[in-house]
Length: 557
Image (cartoon, rainbow, N blue to C red; front, side):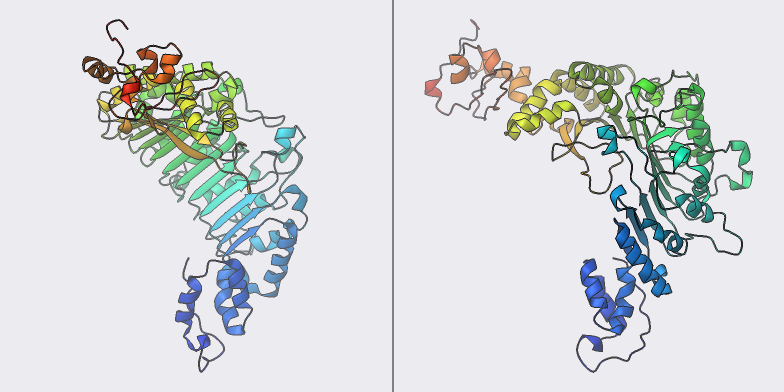
């Protein structure tokens, strides 16, 4: 917790007890309290504690209901200094609780010490969107005027939000301004803003590069820009990327989920399929360290405009260390044309868009993924890779995974994933090629522990996905926690054949299967349990007593 500066109190020190301590010692004690309710109770004990504790009480505010917003407005109106105590404010309400939220509008413009602001108004993310109800909500917080006045103050008034460092905006305007940034584009010229996250908006504005004076370029402190489920207008992206001194992180997530009024433009010259996309990115080539691009819904993608210099432009991002791309991204095309940035340490591939398009067609999805990765490492890797380079394949939450929740045994779930979802021979091939270059191959998947999935951006109260590692080439034979070497390592099997130590387990013998189906090794190691009900495969067992199992005639087999 941040330390508050000790201040003079109006009352003298008490003769004994807690209040006999000087302010600095009391603040050290208050620093250790992380319960908001406890802080409020302490502030209510006496005037001295009220003066010391109130800055902690008001430092972080989370507003979920209009009734709470009204109470805050009354409290701020009664003591003006409370406005300056607020360092972080999150307003994240549902439509049923919007009445009263607007009463904070006046006070937000006065929060001169506010550093972190989150605005999340009702949207059809996981409610109306799922049920097909028409989306007609809008933000009762006037964020457009607030952000405009933070850069262009009204006559006679100081700048609003002069200390703002991070902004997360998931709000919408009324009527035909539902997805428009409008005058809120002023945020990109804010003198202290370092991190911006925008969701479910049209990333567009009535600006062009010609409108930006030379003195304004490379002038803002913005270091991180994240777009989630946005329709991206590349000419406007070029304007925005011309302003920061040194942008370090850029994440562009185009719309995967659309409904009337928010479909992306089908003009290829303004989309990320345009060759101007890489030209825009090059403006931050001197500083960009992390870049993410998801190309959006397959059905709304426009034809790629081939840029003969595209691979060179991508290579010009000389500081780029971490790159995350959807398999559909136009940047992936140039990466495969010998366009690897020279400092790249991690390449993470995302199947989000093609997974959504494939729906339940698991076979097609996996064929696309593993064929693409195989050709990438066999045909398109650069001659030199940075030491410890990692190729990482991340699978989105797929209907296939949801079906596993009907199986009680985690062991069964994991083995089915390793058998039917992960193409182990192909994985070994990719891993072997990368290991020869001192590189690493990983596979992970997004997972919702409850079994119910959500779509980004994840709103207040929604479960966040976790990333579960399914394979890491540093542990070459292990998938989902199980070692498959006894099943997949032909050299090991050959060694045991020569030593006459390959045995047929009881279950396989009863089912009339040969040793190649059983794959049991008599080396004293435990066999892998296999309980795939639909495939009616046998259950591999560890045979402790070798007298009950006769060696197989390897020559005859």
